Amino acid sequence: MNSKTMYILVAALVIVIVVAGVGIYLFMGTGGGGGGGGGGTQDTYTVTNATSLQFEANVTSQGATITYDWAGTNLNLTNVMLRIDLLGGEVGNYSYILNAGNQTAWTAVNGEWTDISSDFNAQWNAWGTQWTGHVNALANWSGTGDYTYTATDGSSITIYNIAINPTLSDSLFQPI
Image (tube, rainbow, N blue to C red):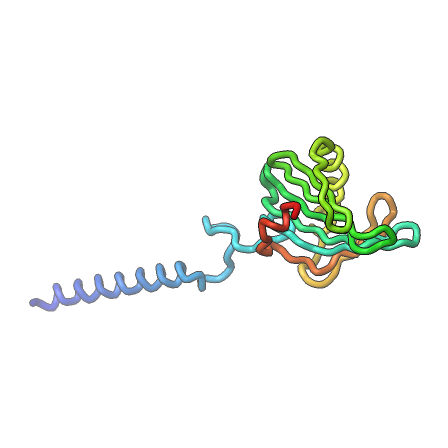
Protein backbone atom coordinates (compact mmCIF):
# COMPACT_ATOMS: atom_id res chain seq x y z
CA MET A 1 0.00 0.00 0.00
CA ASN A 2 1.51 3.32 -0.96
CA SER A 3 1.73 6.24 1.45
CA LYS A 4 -0.80 8.37 -0.47
CA THR A 5 -3.49 5.66 -0.13
CA MET A 6 -2.68 5.26 3.55
CA TYR A 7 -3.09 9.01 4.18
CA ILE A 8 -6.45 8.98 2.40
CA LEU A 9 -7.63 6.01 4.47
CA VAL A 10 -6.47 7.64 7.74
CA ALA A 11 -8.15 10.93 6.78
CA ALA A 12 -11.38 9.11 5.91
CA LEU A 13 -11.24 7.20 9.21
CA VAL A 14 -10.68 10.43 11.18
CA ILE A 15 -13.66 12.05 9.40
CA VAL A 16 -15.90 9.06 10.17
CA ILE A 17 -14.84 9.11 13.84
CA VAL A 18 -15.43 12.87 14.15
CA VAL A 19 -18.84 12.69 12.45
CA ALA A 20 -19.87 9.71 14.60
CA GLY A 21 -18.68 11.50 17.75
CA VAL A 22 -20.64 14.65 16.91
CA GLY A 23 -23.71 12.55 16.10
CA ILE A 24 -23.51 10.69 19.41
CA TYR A 25 -22.89 13.97 21.26
CA LEU A 26 -26.03 15.54 19.75
CA PHE A 27 -28.12 12.37 20.07
CA MET A 28 -27.33 11.99 23.76
CA GLY A 29 -28.56 15.53 24.39
CA THR A 30 -25.32 16.87 25.78
CA GLY A 31 -25.08 19.45 23.06
CA GLY A 32 -26.45 22.13 25.39
CA GLY A 33 -29.57 24.20 25.35
CA GLY A 34 -32.41 21.90 24.44
CA GLY A 35 -35.92 23.02 23.62
CA GLY A 36 -35.79 25.80 21.08
CA GLY A 37 -34.40 26.57 17.68
CA GLY A 38 -32.35 24.29 15.52
CA GLY A 39 -35.17 21.83 14.90
CA GLY A 40 -34.90 20.28 18.39
CA THR A 41 -37.93 19.13 20.30
CA GLN A 42 -39.40 21.03 23.18
CA ASP A 43 -38.49 19.35 26.44
CA THR A 44 -39.25 22.09 28.95
CA TYR A 45 -42.83 22.16 30.17
CA THR A 46 -44.48 25.17 31.75
CA VAL A 47 -47.94 25.84 33.08
CA THR A 48 -49.04 27.07 29.65
CA ASN A 49 -47.87 24.07 27.60
CA ALA A 50 -48.35 21.28 30.14
CA THR A 51 -50.50 18.28 29.32
CA SER A 52 -51.51 17.87 32.97
CA LEU A 53 -51.43 20.20 35.94
CA GLN A 54 -52.22 19.91 39.63
CA PHE A 55 -52.21 22.54 42.37
CA GLU A 56 -53.90 23.73 45.53
CA ALA A 57 -55.34 27.19 46.01
CA ASN A 58 -56.43 29.19 49.02
CA VAL A 59 -59.04 31.72 47.94
CA THR A 60 -59.76 34.48 50.44
CA SER A 61 -62.82 36.63 49.84
CA GLN A 62 -64.65 38.83 52.35
CA GLY A 63 -62.54 37.47 55.20
CA ALA A 64 -63.25 33.76 54.51
CA THR A 65 -60.73 31.35 53.01
CA ILE A 66 -61.65 28.25 51.03
CA THR A 67 -59.06 25.64 50.03
CA TYR A 68 -59.37 24.07 46.58
CA ASP A 69 -57.51 21.12 45.06
CA TRP A 70 -57.33 21.43 41.27
CA ALA A 71 -56.28 18.79 38.74
CA GLY A 72 -56.48 18.92 34.97
CA THR A 73 -55.47 16.51 32.24
CA ASN A 74 -55.54 16.43 28.44
CA LEU A 75 -54.79 20.14 28.62
CA ASN A 76 -54.72 22.07 25.36
CA LEU A 77 -56.89 19.36 23.76
CA THR A 78 -60.63 19.14 23.15
CA ASN A 79 -61.12 16.43 25.77
CA VAL A 80 -59.87 18.39 28.80
CA MET A 81 -60.86 16.89 32.14
CA LEU A 82 -60.93 18.87 35.37
CA ARG A 83 -61.29 17.77 38.97
CA ILE A 84 -61.98 20.33 41.68
CA ASP A 85 -62.21 19.48 45.37
CA LEU A 86 -63.32 22.06 47.93
CA LEU A 87 -61.99 20.98 51.28
CA GLY A 88 -63.65 21.38 54.66
CA GLY A 89 -65.83 24.32 55.30
CA GLU A 90 -69.00 24.54 57.30
CA VAL A 91 -71.09 22.37 54.98
CA GLY A 92 -68.60 19.60 54.15
CA ASN A 93 -66.44 18.58 51.22
CA TYR A 94 -67.50 19.20 47.61
CA SER A 95 -66.04 17.70 44.45
CA TYR A 96 -66.62 18.39 40.77
CA ILE A 97 -65.50 16.41 37.72
CA LEU A 98 -65.89 17.94 34.27
CA ASN A 99 -65.10 16.14 31.02
CA ALA A 100 -65.15 18.46 28.00
CA GLY A 101 -64.68 15.54 25.59
CA ASN A 102 -68.05 13.95 26.32
CA GLN A 103 -69.59 16.96 28.11
CA THR A 104 -70.27 15.15 31.35
CA ALA A 105 -70.24 16.69 34.80
CA TRP A 106 -70.45 15.18 38.25
CA THR A 107 -70.62 16.66 41.71
CA ALA A 108 -70.22 15.07 45.11
CA VAL A 109 -71.08 16.23 48.59
CA ASN A 110 -69.07 14.37 51.21
CA GLY A 111 -68.28 11.63 48.68
CA GLU A 112 -71.80 10.99 47.34
CA TRP A 113 -71.77 11.53 43.56
CA THR A 114 -74.57 13.00 41.41
CA ASP A 115 -74.61 13.26 37.61
CA ILE A 116 -75.13 16.91 36.64
CA SER A 117 -74.30 16.51 32.95
CA SER A 118 -77.56 18.21 31.97
CA ASP A 119 -76.00 21.36 33.44
CA PHE A 120 -72.58 20.81 31.83
CA ASN A 121 -72.39 24.20 30.06
CA ALA A 122 -73.08 26.19 33.23
CA GLN A 123 -70.63 24.06 35.21
CA TRP A 124 -67.96 24.42 32.53
CA ASN A 125 -68.51 28.18 32.37
CA ALA A 126 -68.10 28.48 36.13
CA TRP A 127 -65.24 26.07 36.81
CA GLY A 128 -63.51 26.36 33.44
CA THR A 129 -63.36 30.12 33.85
CA GLN A 130 -61.73 29.76 37.27
CA TRP A 131 -59.28 27.17 35.93
CA THR A 132 -58.34 29.47 33.05
CA GLY A 133 -57.91 32.40 35.44
CA HIS A 134 -55.52 30.40 37.64
CA VAL A 135 -53.54 29.06 34.68
CA ASN A 136 -53.28 32.52 33.12
CA ALA A 137 -52.06 33.94 36.45
CA LEU A 138 -49.55 31.10 36.83
CA ALA A 139 -48.01 32.10 33.49
CA ASN A 140 -46.21 34.73 35.62
CA TRP A 141 -45.05 32.18 38.22
CA SER A 142 -41.28 31.82 38.62
CA GLY A 143 -41.45 28.01 38.55
CA THR A 144 -40.74 27.55 42.25
CA GLY A 145 -42.62 28.19 45.47
CA ASP A 146 -46.09 29.63 45.88
CA TYR A 147 -47.80 32.20 43.68
CA THR A 148 -50.20 34.86 45.00
CA TYR A 149 -52.38 37.15 42.94
CA THR A 150 -55.57 39.17 43.16
CA ALA A 151 -58.50 37.98 41.03
CA THR A 152 -60.71 40.36 39.10
CA ASP A 153 -63.39 40.02 41.81
CA GLY A 154 -60.90 41.19 44.46
CA SER A 155 -60.25 37.75 45.99
CA SER A 156 -56.72 37.05 47.18
CA ILE A 157 -55.52 33.74 45.74
CA THR A 158 -52.45 31.80 46.82
CA ILE A 159 -51.58 28.82 44.62
CA TYR A 160 -49.16 26.24 46.01
CA ASN A 161 -48.03 22.61 45.61
CA ILE A 162 -47.90 23.23 41.87
CA ALA A 163 -47.05 20.16 39.80
CA ILE A 164 -46.49 20.47 36.06
CA ASN A 165 -47.19 17.30 34.07
CA PRO A 166 -47.85 15.03 37.03
CA THR A 167 -49.06 11.52 36.30
CA LEU A 168 -52.75 11.67 37.17
CA SER A 169 -54.74 8.48 37.55
CA ASP A 170 -57.77 8.09 35.28
CA SER A 171 -59.79 7.26 38.39
CA LEU A 172 -59.27 10.82 39.64
CA PHE A 173 -61.63 11.91 36.85
CA GLN A 174 -64.26 9.24 37.52
CA PRO A 175 -67.04 9.47 40.10
CA ILE A 176 -66.44 6.59 42.50
